[in-house]
Image 1: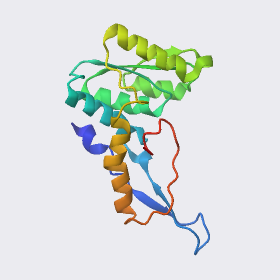
Image 2: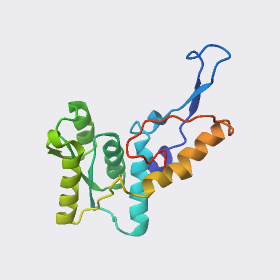
Image 3: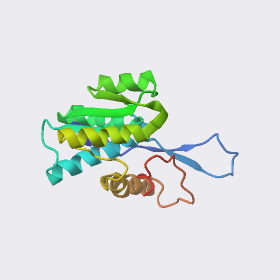
Image 4: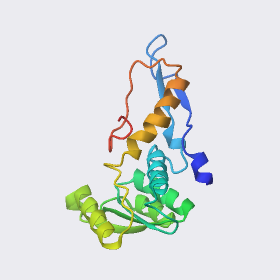
Length: 179
């Protein structure tokens, strides 16, 4: 599949004008250069490939997942490329731009109570999966999430930095990246 070869192998660049000359070196791994625009493309692809390998996801199946954004966008991209139906459960308070992006990939959106935030989305995805038999990747507990970063993101970063890493800073969501 073409999408497989497009995810990952993102560049690492040095920020040259952020700190004074002779100060710390700050480098960025540009995960926004993944096809759907975030590090969650890796997670989405990894969860789908793992499910296919285990035989729990077959051509034409449905995937259902709760999301507040980037994992859903990554899954929508992968589902569209690999021929899966996708239903995403998300709080109705998510931005119209995010909803439009998800729908543009062909995802069906089920909007949940914004007062209950992700809890309502998770409960709805679990309910729908149980009722329909749809594959539920569960990004929050799926071992493929941290594994893909151990197998790809970490080694890419280490190689590009030639092992010279004194500190690592990242934005936390599910915790998969740092695991």
